[in-house]
View 1: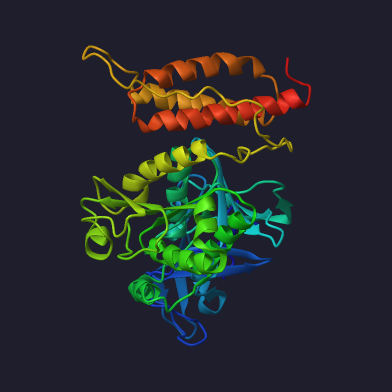
View 2: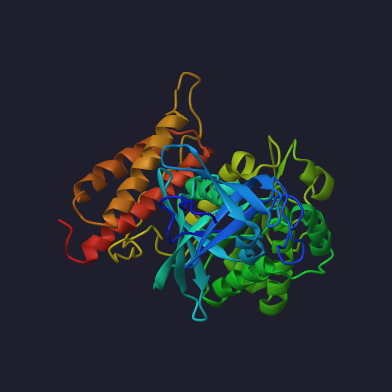
Length: 447
């Protein structure tokens, strides 16, 4: 690699990326083309991903590769020889799982692994999870050793659709996490570029059983074994893989046990005849996938609740908020809810509250002159509730704010018009805050 310095401030980060264009292998093809995205291996498990800008043909071809931008925002470009480049794709990410938590302003995303005893451990941090990444990829910073997550279990699991790059899948999970108000477990289903459509056809015919489908089945089976409620969100091609996983789990565990534990929510539905289990299906009025492949005109069977929403196929833009509303209602109505799974950096575990926060119902009927609180006010209050809940996971310095904030939250939610999705989200956020307060109370630290 000549004598150029490596891109700064990236030591120790592991880069994954999407291939663009024809698959290339340095051993078999011998040369890359301009526009190919390649990986330079610097040794010591450090890899840099970049796009070939220019090819210099000589006895030993070399390539001018862009590595993105440096700390000053300037493009970093290096000349690299062919024998130091290799092709790389995201096939090895298929079925891998990511825990999405934290606040919208400071999201926390970690790669996690389901262990044999049903617990999880964190394997790596996703660096800058809200960004689009390099070539749509994500950067993982491995945790050594892996961090055990104790009693943490997902309440909501989501699988992305076709042609979705890892960074976009993470952003879709972040949108769902913000809407539902609790941690989300993302199962990544990797894109095959031109092979995506073929994989859809194989999945529809139940001729494939990929790692993502296996992961979804494993998460559902574990929830059933632990008698734990789980909302399963799927988008586009993910609805096909999830439907196949549902058929597998129902065959193994029985429909009654499945429906006691699992609520599937299909968004941008691509399944024409879904499994005969209780589920919700969201279809967009401008979503070509739903209209052509899914069930748009009417519910396919009596167990499906069909929701028509305005918009196209994009999950984060058109579906995440509505899926989050149904998920929040299901969590709120669960007879035996799990303890809230907000991050607890100092080992504080959120326990079930001794009492639940008062449940707001909203205004059923009102005069024409009545002006309810605005959605912006409700969103601001939700941020306050979630921020205080997270801070109580660190210390007890703000316990005095709990009662006044709960009072304000109840008053605002009671003033919203019945049917407003934010009522369920505020109720769930109040429950989570009470759980955090009770944790300190049970430790004898609350006033």
